[in-house]
Image 1 (cartoon, rainbow, N blue to C red):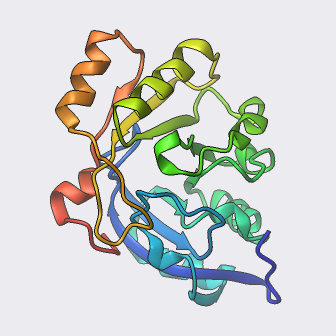
Image 2 (tube, helix red, strand yellow):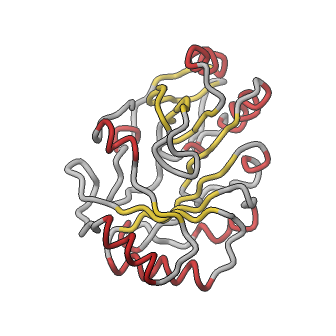
Length: 226
């Protein structure tokens, strides 16, 4: 875990926007992007969160999101579960009446976090270059109300993810397939995949998954803080 010498968190940004992904797409959210990640996925669109950040106490974080007047809060990154005070923030948010979601790559234990938050676990495909299989240790901690996400970078990724869905018994009701597109500032080059190809492949193969595009990028482009 990312060790903190103070009773707080390293925060890259806090902002108010619409949820651009998951089954809650389109709902107003408070976004809390925490600093730090131990992976370097080829398609990453938040490399600016790997380092730096602002030290904030838990109460400062709470005060920052209060004016947004929202029900939902998303903790994202980077990898938010790397910071040891993240769980304390989750408990505080729940106590204040917020519905908390956490985006995680699944390589850090979600056991404690899943008790108080909705987990969105991004299972890394081979095209991410971070496909190490560590997510399997966390499957037993997922709830039916949690979600699993696959970011598809190529046809080969699609076939791999399809096999995961068909051969595994995932406990979640929602499995998300999202097409990745090449980004200028991503850590590596990816082939990318056309959204229509992915959609038609899902329909052809009768997969029990939810196709999704990143709504926020359609509305505002690939810029931080929206």
